[in-house]
Image (cartoon, rainbow over all chains, first blue to last red; front, side, top):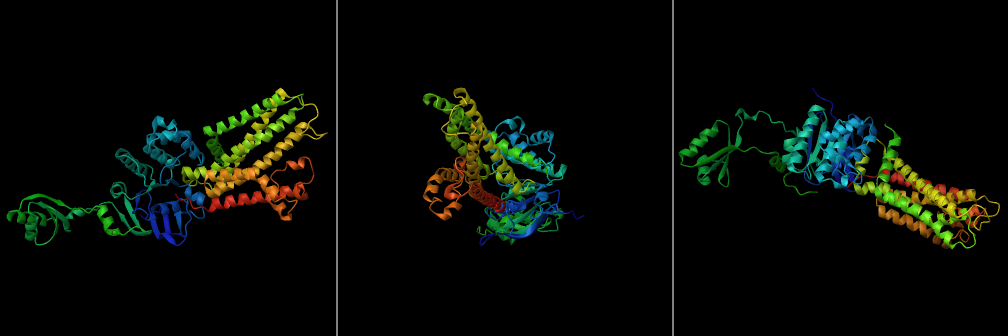
Amino acid sequence: MQLEPVVRLEGVTKKVSSRTLVENVTLDIPPGQVFGFLGPNGAGKTTTIRMMVGLTSISQGDIKICGYSIKEHFEKAVANVGAIVENPEMYKFLSGYQNLRHFARMMKGITDERIEEVVRLVGLGNRIHDKVRTYSLGMRQRLGVAQAILHRPKLLILDEPTNGLDPQGIRELRDYLRHLCQEEGTTVFVSSHLLSEMELMCDSVAIIQNGRLIDVRSLKYGSGASGAEAAETGFTVDDPERALAVAGSGSRQGSMITLKLTRDEIPEMNAKLVQAGIKVYGIHTVTRSLEDQFLEMTGGDPIG
Amino acid sequence: MGNFFSLVRNENMKIFRRARTWVMLGILAFCNAILPVLFSMVDSGGQTTLWDSVMLTASFTFYLCTIFSVIVAADSVAGEFSWGTIKLLLIRPWSRSKILLSKYIAVILFSLLCTLLLAAVAILVSSIFFTGGGASSLIGPGESGPVFTFRYLLCDYVNLFMTVAIAFMLSTVFRAGGLSIGLALFIMFAKGIFASLFSPDRYEWAKYLLFAHMDLSGYLKADVGPGGVTLGFSLAVLAIYYIVFMAVSWYVFHKRDVAA
């Protein structure tokens, strides 16, 4: 079943004078997912997000949120969106609660109970009545999430949400986004340059570099363990030089040699090495992490 | 979508939840209370009437009133940009025009509050020390004291209103509170010098300058203003400048790309 995408970017381009910040990005974000937006610094992630929420004009193309164009029906489109763009800046001279009241008044039908509920969800507790001035970055981040989800948006956009969070905070945020996604069916769009973080958090990622979309992929791991496919396998040995000679192919990294083997070939190779008098300390499959794939794809291109 | 009044409430909350605002109102009330007392100490032989005292007080304290209104106006838009909260404000289901309008209304409400506070305190304290009767040096014969004072304050308010419009425009265009406060106050104090340098009495074109018309209090005593123009002409010039200031603010605020 093909679900109607929550967000549809149609050939989106942003030009500032002669520089093209984002070039012809076309992307559909399906509902009910945590969708990652990955790219090195300066790739155009924040610019794209700014265009999605109407903070920045779109030079060419259009962005539709829940079917409404952000250009032509801004108010209807943006009513479905909650967002933190860059840092969660709030009114420092107001308390957290007053900040939430402020944003609640700008939306339709947010009751006091809903505000209480959101405060509980993000775990701000009693500190909500303190001035934001006294908050730590982690607490401001929580308050940022609270204001973004007050009106139960269909789309939640978070720009670099893990910036400045401690490991505990990152973990909580991750669990929380999962919860939103599964329980409330919210589509979450997160941008980041932290690959390992995205790997844990997202169902799919789009990779952007130099303003161009270079890949969209699902991170749901398929059942790749059938054994028919050859995988990179590492052998940690005492004498890698000789082991390479025995294996006949492969590459060496320190005391590890890497060979491309199918599942059945692994014990055979192990036996061969042992017979040749090489001590094998460990065997493991070298999974290519998103990071490796990402660096491979972006190929260490200089920024800009 | 929702209630526009709640936007104005938000803006009011952002003005009145700041300690600064109460300090400003406190200073304003204090100055309006202390000046009539000082006048009563230097008044020899009961020359000063109640309405003289109110107008003399206002002639000093209206500067404060203008300065405070300008500060609030300049911070209204520029503050959101420097705090970074503009990003959260503009991604709500409200058009930018309505957000700007709510800010402008809140600024005008604040300036009205300042003016009312000024008038109320000045009249209250003056009435303790002075009486309403007797000939006045400031008010022409046959004029009613309260009416003349009201007109005088109205002229002052028009002056303030235009200065605030300038500050609001500069705040929207430059997104820098300090710059817009500075420039608006510069205009407030320099316009007298400017108007005398380029006097409409000497140069025909000078009667189209804003500075020649911001202070309308001359019309309280005479029917002709600078360069022989009428009150209607002055008001028309002010209206045109006002429309231009507002149009520039709206255009810039509407078009602006909000970037870091």
